[in-house]
Image (cartoon, rainbow, N blue to C red):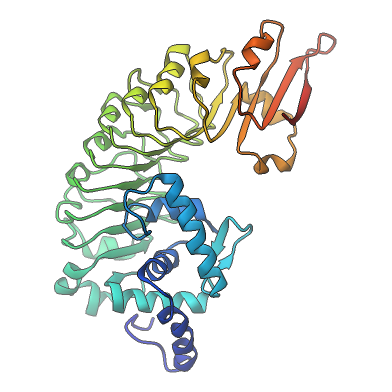
Length: 395
């Protein structure tokens, strides 16, 4: 593997020409977004990129809301695609990067921003402690380098972004691993195959973003110590409850619990303490909702986006719709909706509500749903005890 500090002779001229596209990008916002994009997998969603970039101070504008940051990132990604540095993924809401362009990106990342990846040589660079102390970004997939070099703490006082996602292998994160990275803002431990997090995680007092998507983590109580956390993504993890300690994350703006199929309990008075929450995703979970727990959502006055599955029979409290959310997708009785085919045009709508209709629901109750774009109702058929669509149209 060639050093990331220079291009290989075979394609040196071609790489240098591609680098001109990077050099001529207008500002650091574009250049740094391009660098972070090169550390993502191909066909990554822009939403996933947002989680990794939003708290790094790359996107222009002070104190951006999550929605403002998303809109800004959409524009930046479009400009990078127009510059041929990024490609569309399966959809326009995703992106990829040509392998040749990625090599150029990682070279620029190393020379301009002290970024370390798998391309760095173990002997000459990873074992050079002076170089590591200057690192601002580290991105690794797998455990080869980690197990070889760091039996204890990783000494990187300038580190702001750390990605250590796994692919089919497991590694033991030492208890002291996070002790010497006081500036860390973004930590991505996607797909790690451990049930608990090391105790030194609680020392990351400046951490803004934590992604554990697809990991086997079960105990998340230690996350409550991360008082500066703004973005927390626990998609597809094995957590069984959202513990009391999480109520300390009073500055949290984004929480994703999608597809945590073992999640059954959200401790009372936790959600209501997350007063800065702007986006909340609780889909694909097995929570037994109670009216009291749903009422806690009314305290989230900053909430603009909500995705929620309610599998048990429960009537939404009227206070639930006391204000208009900008985006939501709420389904009640999710097992019914999975068996009923919905049109692919669903994605065109920002506000979707689906639930089982019966005679106990009055027109007055339906009128509180002021800003629904797609309303789906089903009712039981007395003849065959099946659910049939009552109507499905834009309202």
